[in-house]
Image 1 (cartoon, rainbow, N blue to C red):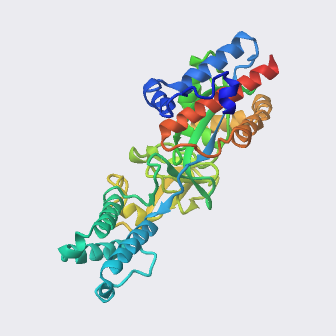
Image 2 (cartoon, rainbow, N blue to C red):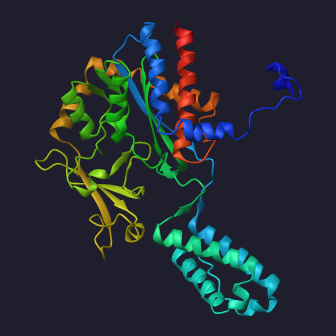
Length: 399
């Protein structure tokens, strides 16, 4: 009633159908890149008002938790089989002695074997199997086994687009990443939303392209070690763009074709494989100050590699270890090391803190720390509206 009063409507007047906004979001916004559209609009206003004076962009990524909490595959199977057993006992209590022995370990393979044994037992008893409550629980268990075996799902969630990402070597999150580009005046000029396991560095070319398309003449990129990969340094050289990002020894040089896709996670100081698995440890091989470069070797959990859907060309069957090695220094890296000592690099590096503050504003003020709906498309809509709001606030403050 308060909304009707505000809109000067009579109490008995009809309001819009509740599904109208949902249909608008699904149909009217379909095939519309709302994120780019709204960022472009706000940047155009800022340029028109003379707010943006620099040619530098600051880049970083911030994570947003999925609306759905992740559940491990083994916990899903245990819950499904538990509900199935309960339904059976309600109908036939004496079946307790017929049940296969439960798996008490944390071994997923053993849990799958137990679930299949339970399924086989019921398939041999059509009278019990066709009871509606039992049949429903059995079908749920079958679906879970299929998802875990055929799609190699280690985590099960209602949000199919969300993925497990790493904030550090010991901590992780389940959700999405928003990769941002922002001017020194704190106007966001580009954004790319990905699932949580994606690396920061590979997104830089798109952020630069978006910023240029939105009217920013980019001559400098300011970021952390995640953006100082060889590909980004080469891109900067080709486009005459300075990459103000400290070089980390663990930067991929793309020696092997399959492993060009391995990404460096600066928070964990580890590499992450294309399947999203993070290295468990690393070791430096070779000696300093000799003709041959030192090599950093990263070790991965070989048990995960054995069952990985992307193992073709990456993991050799029967191998007891899976490693990824990179040389510490190359010619282009040496140029970056020299650049790090310049006054320009040191001066520009002082502006990197600004994007950390912007990430804090997005999360703490505008609730961007968690998705409000399922799926990456809805995350993009949430990102578009949030970034549009913070850019307008900044324009109003500086104008």
